[in-house]
Image (cartoon, rainbow, N blue to C red):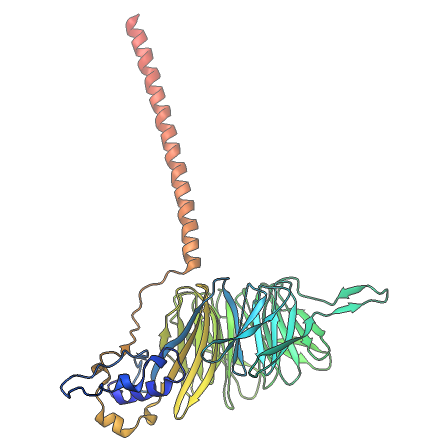
Length: 475
């Protein structure tokens, strides 16, 4: 921590001033003394937008982050985010899927559908898949140019015509389509639904080639390993299942069930490299379980869990060996897996949202020797935020910077992140607590009324006894 000084911070701010709206306010004139000023006037340093995360261990890299954009949506919440080709797509209750330019989130247009409540978005190359309130899946194509252009290619399931000339729909989901995954090499689109089923669609001819009941409860997350075609599904029944495709029959068979938590599993993420493959699952108990794949077979062994979130983990994303998790506790945690091992560590906590983080997307942003990431997150507080993260390994720090610059704490305008956070009340927890409180209040009230009735009855008996005694004395 102490080796990071003014020169490195200002150089980072210099490289950012042409990209971020926040950093555009920092100019060279502000960083240098005004002309004609005497040398005895101290130079006023502008407040840095960056926050420096502390190092959990001496071997961890330095990490800087700040929020470069924050948009508030008045029409409702954003439920899905996808990024591709320098564009970011967001889906909400509206019939319009908004399109933003990376990384400054300039409005590029929208895709309009006949149905709203977009719950899942998936982008691959120049194709976009979206699910809607009518339980249909729409396939779009788009072009990245000065003017954004899009075209709807298909709607799944497609309408077919029977022998009697009547139009009918092919097999479709009977409930909300909550998640999607696309197998690139085969052109297969997988969809998971709250009707507990998973369907496989061949995009080329818009045909449903397989449909099977995957879980005993809602299917909340689905993904596919692009290396071997393995399909992973997660459900509210607390299980994660692995499926293999039988190519001769266009069907899928269950190969393994991973169940280590009784609470619902809300999100899945896969981190795959040449030698290692890790599967992550986020559940409602705040835990992130992970499994490592054996090299010579399709078996996944449980490697442990990541603990840090106070409430349910709602979304996950991976870029290389970095893991990003969004939670109901309103925070986003940035995790890093050590190369060649199962050791994970939390590098920082992004806590700019005021509501549960519903969805996120992350992508790599390289800048010379500095590794950077862009994280797009949407919360139920109706805000959409863009975070820029820079990871500075120790090996990339210049020697003159280590020896000639002042320590980090000497810079008065650099914020140092502290992990001691004030407790955050989960909305679902508050709702349950209110329900319990109301139930207890009603119960106490009924008990009090019963006691009042008993007291009134007792008083009535005492009054009757007194009346009888008075009559006896009068006689």
